[in-house]
Image (cartoon, rainbow, N blue to C red):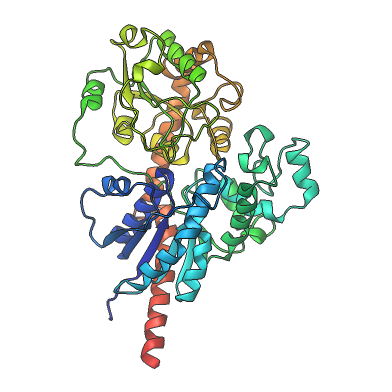
Length: 481
């Protein structure tokens, strides 16, 4: 018992944007801080988890919690966020049972944004409790601040469409606000405010960002004259946590094709694990790519009108017949310069490849970090959730992306504008400047994670020490009893 290691239980919501950073957090706790880690996954498809951990990782065990049927608990038209939150809530009894079944009790429970109701389990079982915001410090700031504002301020933002001012932080323009704010009677808005109230009840809040990326916002979260009075607990920037290139990834036809292309000549087009386009938008995007005359890899899913997150829980295989969703003759005309990939492509390996020179992305934070840590500039194409906020930060604050003039989620972006954006990133002088800035951020992120003096490494070390002290205290208490 003298050399007992802290044992952390991690809880991840459905979706790659949550699962990947939580998994990478678990790996870092094991590798750099000597933890045992049990990762509990609330998944819609067990094979998803298995594909991420094809090889065993020492001292990291993955437990897939039983799938739950929520069809009778929500309206069929509920947002993807509401569906995830209800799924997490219904999984709590299984989580409690699974923790009790472990051979050694966890010292701490770390949950992602949608798992804050599991704090009750942590308190019952005498565990430290942390929440891991897998997005930006800016998103964390708005999440914990919104429950504290009065209705008049809400009205200014929601009805009068004024920017939402956050103490010490960049304001959120109405056009970039969270979709959850648009209907205060919707369950998503109610749940979002509950989460914002519960997050500061943790022993600490982890963020998938780093000090030099968002210094002003992180400072406001710590400053009790600003947002510190709302955050109430320590905040720990521990990013960028994103999946690295795996040594065991087999060379497939996409990577073989990429290998034959000139350096930084290919734009990669993908909308994440859940993003979908309308039929009209897919047509315009195809024409825009063709007119740009740039090399491209495009991950194509069947279009879904009026639901930008339509692929999130849709496991249907659309790998056959991609050509029927695209303009007639498109595949033949672009055969020499483009590659259309149905449903899925090895994104991290593509972004890490020297031939990749740009990323047309939905701006999910996971994909954004994968782009930044590989030094790839972006075309920001937000679809839902906090992606508009991410796009605004990437373009206006960090200067590592360009963006359509108005939201792609509100209108069809024309082929002419798409052509212009692709050319701007891939061949214009502005694109070269953006490329330079994103490579500077790449080195900044690498520095933050270094085990000697890195700000994110040091931040996670503080949590590790807190867990070690708790473990020793519990051990001494048990011996005294």
